[in-house]
Length: 167
Image (cartoon, rainbow, N blue to C red; front, side, top):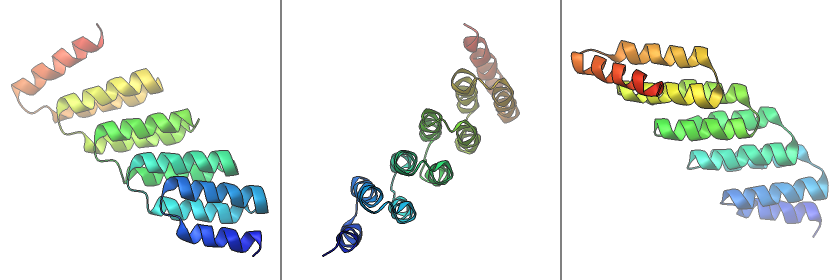
């Protein structure tokens, strides 16, 4: 049995991120077939159950294939696996770690869709200001927090949170 047939067999048996990535690495190392390796990583990512899996596949796309477009697409896919603002923030941090700043900003923007309370928006804004150093996006998020205020208690929480940001 030749290497290609052996790898095809291994690829059929993959059912975890580590396995997909290991076989993709063998494909690149043994056959120099980055297209097939990319397809295999995408197939694995389609089965991803957590945003962390999407990060693992994105990192593999960069490491094995030097393909920022594929890594970007995989991180974008990861947004669908985020269940909370915190998940989005972790995904955005991973994008930053992979030097994909624009993707990180896009993920942060999506995080606002998970914000429910005034404090959620304010925490997100604080994260944007500190991690992304993006004052404009942070201000837009604070504006969303203010828009969310509907009663006196909301305005009090908003004011206290803003004051805490400057301590």
